[in-house]
Length: 558
Image (tube, rainbow, N blue to C red; front, side):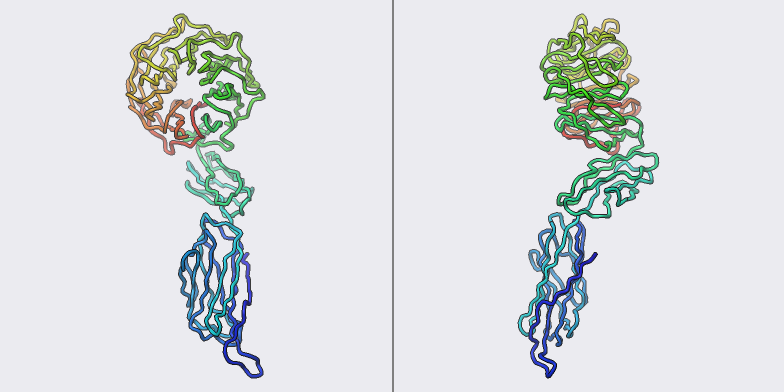
């Protein structure tokens, strides 16, 4: 509601006097109409009226109004018959008119348009002064109080249907019909809280919110994210090592990722993750505390299980769950062993398997489990192989383990084809991929010719499509993803010689439909996403990369 302020400031002699009517005077003063609130980032107007409340008209040829604007307010333009205005240096605006002002009359209305910049703060005061040289140098001053309000908004992506409506604080509903920025109509004062929600979902789509709640802190809110997808029923989970969180995304039918409302979820020092076959339990290794944390999963939302994080070996770098969902295994980098647990499918509680931890000849870097046979493999010092007892979870070393590729150095990620016939190991130092044939009866590995990824590329992790025809490898040093076609006897043929990813791509994963590939980029804190075409070709998805947390290290899909 506009606030009208009228003040008679000073009466000065106008020259001459009247008979019995008393002395003749000119009285110059100010009246103003000012909005009580100005909105940050927008323009506002202030109307000022010069008044002569005396009984004689002015005779001077110039009346001047000056305005002193506080920091953050900038003069833009002026309107008013006979007025001429200009910025006069610093924060001052000077306006003048040569029109005479009749006795007991107002000059024409003067309206200033000002821009409220990001540095403006309130409450504050704009000071106006008027001068007219008639008689003595008459001057009136008028302070105008104001406050600053701030807008709430953000950006929408992935919207391709009608009907999306957002609300703030349970009201102020806003219909959104297109991708791009949005701003709620109601501005809020500093210190006020906001809570944005999806009031109505668009037809056939699910829109998720990020950064939806908070407090106004001296600036407009522009970071609320609204990500919309046509849901596929699958989810992606990204472990953010440095921010100790897990970002969770709904996967669209087109492969796009929409971070779900409430994400990210707390999980200290996440280095690697595994999800059970039912998609109800997620486990994360905690590199610093040397523990593994269990999280319940319901529609992507993560909730800690009742059991406290469970101690494992030193610097756990990998975790895997057997195909039956009964056992969980953790590779411990610096204690040279594997911790093994039975999984309570109802509560998520872990109980150590008899004989755990199981020793390794060196560091335990990454774990792979053959999907159709009870064999478990750990990279580090070569590839250590174990037989996995399906009843007890006990691990027994395979004869001849560990297995080596004589030209493979610093093996990290391992991918095993769906038939359980071949294992592919990324060698981070020697820039190549080792290929091992798996003896389905004994689990023993036989190495064949490795495949180079290029000098200085730093292959890190590997994943194979459900059909067993394509192998994809993240190249951490090169910042790319390498695609291979899998041929007879597990042979590899290069397809894409390095599709761009983000900075320092780490773990790589494939969606359950086999249509899309995702890689977590630790250096750029995001996820690169690709569609798969005939011949194992990769194409970056629209909107990729998708934002994640600090140090996006690991990724699993369900």
